[in-house]
Each structure stands twice: as structure tokens, then as C-alpha cells.
Length: 302
Length: 305
Image 1 (cartoon, rainbow over the protein chains, first blue to last red):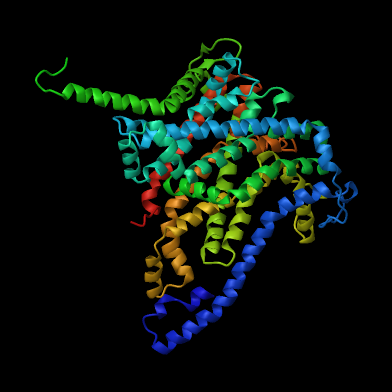
Image 2: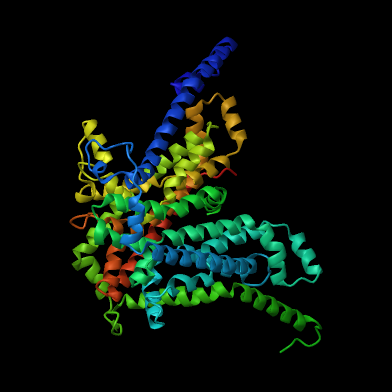
């Protein structure tokens, strides 16, 4: 509709009156256009939010209300026992603690190692630096399957399989993605701050601690938040390396829960699923800016 | 060795060496990790791919036997290839189109932009295992809300994860639920388009659709390229969702994706040589596809400058 009204082939030949008429026409059309746009956006929002709503709604509905046709869209009665059941059916606290430990360990180790490495790739000048940085970028493209099996064999020779170590120790070696992100950020910082710190006789570690990190909070928080999320959500690496119930993460524990008890006990499953989703969702609301920023950086410079 | 008569040059060289050593010291965490957990494993897996290697024994050389078995004698390999290509061919283009459409809707100075952006991004925060559980529950035949609504609309009610023909579409729906991640990237790409181009187009009398088609989309192509490549590589490596969905259904190998089969060979059948060969085929395939896409970019990717 709007496209027809504004056909550019008419622009050259029409008079001023026609142009004015069209301008008011365009204004008149804009309102329903805006309304349609809002309608689509709201509809999509409902589609995106409904599953999350359904997860929580299922967790709090009484059993009798779960298996009815038509579905009970709004719970008429709330029950909370499922959240307790989730804690008693499986060692939920244990899983949570394991997941938290792995995630936080990775956050600390990743941020420290990547900061040092990215500093070496950005604020220090040395021959071979950019060639080596090219290798960092190249490793980002590498499918992890190609290193998976030899890594597993290395870790099993070290007797690390079945412990947290394969999921934690590698974080000390940095992650190509965050090294890349931080290097770009560090390069954008003004040089004179670093120069004056050097003139004052500050060593590199002091410069990193007192000059670099305070200025680089956005990128450091982005790295921390993403590292936490990835480790909290991760399913693959725990599946490969964790072998006993005692050191299962939430992902792995919940997955086993499906087969063990609850393939059809949807109420408890959804309660457990809701509980596991709370930390990332809460983190998202607090650190949304950093998510958007991090994603944007990857998208634009990638 | 020092050049006599050029005073200071030796010192200079030594300064240079010191700088290099200092640089290497700072990047050493990455360098050690790269040599130990990447470069060596890459070479080792290439070697394993030419061997028969059951994890307990030692690898022994079998030449191209793994590759021959894969391409000529293993129907499951081809099942996994077909499943993965189907998933990639449907979910990635759909994700690109829907992602762009939503970003365009959001970009037009719409009221409540940040709220919508939050809502669209929120599903990507739900971890894989909960998300797949939720998918299975929403799509449960006969009592799930999705099939109920389909029934009310007079549409067929698929068996979803229980039906070999519908299990992959179910996972494609799940992938599209996470489209918000790319919407945020497209929005950033849209904000990079200079306003002057829109003004010029408006002066030329271009309407909304024409500006979208002739200005916005062409200048968004670098972002589309990025999302396309990342999306395809992600689809070729699809694993966790399919693995978890296997607990709810996926009959007749309908959810046997490439990486799932690789995982089974490595960690259930302990065929480390065969699994390594699969990993190398994947690597070469990903490289070829990526290069092929970049070869075409001259024809469809436009840069603002």
C-alpha cells in the first residue's frame, strides 16, 4: 500500500499540489502502518514469551490441571511442592554448587588470562606480534571436533577425566574469542595514559591493574558475563568429562533426570527447568547492556 | 657475531630481543594452550584418522580405511550428513530472513524498542537442557498447547519429536526461538548505515519499501554475511539440543546429526580413529563452504565505504 503511494516514477512529473497531497496521504497512512507494526511486534513477543510462561505455569499447576484438553491457560490454583520435589528427587543443590564452581572458576581464570594475553597483543610492540595474533583469529574458526579426541586422550593420561579439571584448567590459557574482543578494546584506548604511567616508572603489571582494567570495565564485564553463561549452560563438555553423579552439573543432572524419573512428570521437570533458568535470566536483566555490547562487537568486527 | 664498528647496533638488537621476549611472556598463557591443546591435537587427530584406534590400545596405521568406510560402507554416516544438511538448509535461511525482518521492524524508531529487544533476546538465555524439555512439553501430542491450537485452527497435528518426519522441524522451531541473538547483531548493523543515505533516498522520492530494498538490505549485507557464516558453522556442529531431544523421541535416526554420530563413535563405540576421520571431514567441509561463500561475496555483499 505505502509502496504504491510513494512510487518514485511519479515524483518527477507531479506538481507541487500533488506532492502536498501525497505528503498528507503519507501521514494518514503512517498511523495504521505504525499500528500494524506494533501489532506484529506484540504478536512476536507473545510467541517468544509464551514458552517461558508455560514452563513456570506448568511448574505451579496441580497435577490434575496438567493433562487436560483444552489446556488450562491460566493456573486456577498454585502449588509449590514441585520446587521442593526437584530438590529431593535429585541432588539439586550439589549440581548447582558444581555448576557454580565451574562457572565462576572459568570467569576468574578467563578474565585474568585473556587480559594479560590481550595486553601483550595490543599495548606492547614486538616483532611477530601481529603474525601470532593472526593465529589466534585462525583458531576461532577451527571446529572443536578436530581437537576433541586428542584432548580427551591427553586429559585421560593425566587422570583428569571424571574431575572438574578438563572443564576448568584450560581457562588459564585464555579464549581466542575474548582475547580478540579485549585486544580490539585495548587498542582503542588513548596511548598517552599508558605513556605517562610508563614515565612515572610503573611496570607492566601495575599499568594493567591501575590504568588498563579501570578503563576496560565494559569489555571485561562482557567477557565475564558470557563466560559465566556459557559454562552455566554448557552440556557438551560436562557430558564428555564428568562421569559420576557427584560432580554432575545442572545440565547433566537434569538430563539424567529425564530418563530416570520424570519423562512424564512434566510438573517436576518444568520446576527443575525453571530453577536452572533463573540465574542466567537474572544475570541477563542486570547485565543486559553488556550482552548487547558484546554481541554487537562480535557482529560488527567479525 | 656483533657488527664491529657500528656501536649500539648490538644493544639495539638485544633490546629488540627483550621486547619480543616480553611480548611472548604476556601471550604465553595463550601460546602454551595453543601448542598443547590445539596444535598438537590437530596434528594428532589427523594422524589418528588414518589409524584403527580403540582408546585402550595403540593406534595402528590403516591408511584411508576410515575414510573409505565412511564414504562407501557406512549408511549411518550418510543419514547423519543428510539430517545435518537438512537442518542447516532450513534453519539458517529462515533464521536470516526472520532475524532481518524483526530487526527492520524494530529499527524504524518504534516505541518500546528496548523492551522488545529484551523480549526477543530473552529466549537465548534459557539453557539448552531446560529449553529442549520445554520444547518437548509444548509439542506433546494431544495435550500440548501447540497441537491444541493447531487442532482448533483445523490444521494437522504432527507427532513432532515422536514422528521421524517432524522431529527435525521441532528442533528448527527451537532454533528460531533463539533468533533474538542475531536480531541484536542486525540492529547494530542497521545503526551503522549512514543517515545521509536515507535522506538522499527520501529526496529522490523513495518510499519505505524502496529504501528498505535498495538502501537498507544492500548495506546490511556484511552483517548478513557474518550471520550466515556463523549460523552455518553452528548448524554443522549442532549437538546438544539433538542429544537431549533424543531422550524424548527422534525415532529411526531422525535426530542423528553429524556430531551426534561422531560423539557416538568416539565415546560410545570408542572408535577414536573413525571419529577423528569424521572430524577432519567436517573441518574440510566447513572450510570449503566458508570459502565458497566468501567467493560469492563480490556479487552480493556491499560495503558502505
